[in-house]
Amino acid sequence: MKLLNIDHIPGKEIEALGIVKGTVVHTKNVGRDFMAAMKTLVGGELVGYTQMLNEARQIAVKRMVEEAQEMGADAVVNVRYGTSSVMSGAAEVIAYGTAVKIL
Image 1 (cartoon, rainbow, N blue to C red):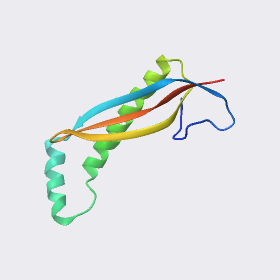
Image 2: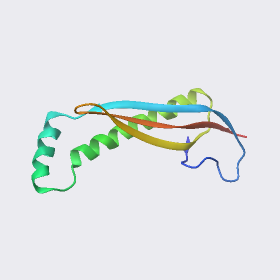
Image 3: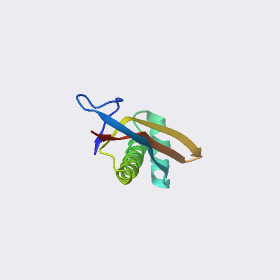
Image 4: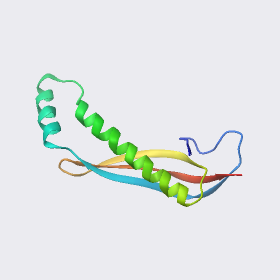
């Protein structure tokens, strides 16, 4: 499945099939929370949180691709990501775009 963050596929004609999305709500774990709290004392990247968000994005993209495949899509264009805090310690990640058929 081709994923693009532009609204077309260069050199190809496409037919829009509809909007597709994949979402996941991911929570922090106690170990990551403790290490992050310690890291705030000295500064720097919170590696545990970076890994958590990368995992969440991968799950969201996988779900978006599965939805596009169910529609018979060859690609998803105009792919975007969003995130929001659902509650303390939990973040939602969404991947969305337009499923298209290459003509």
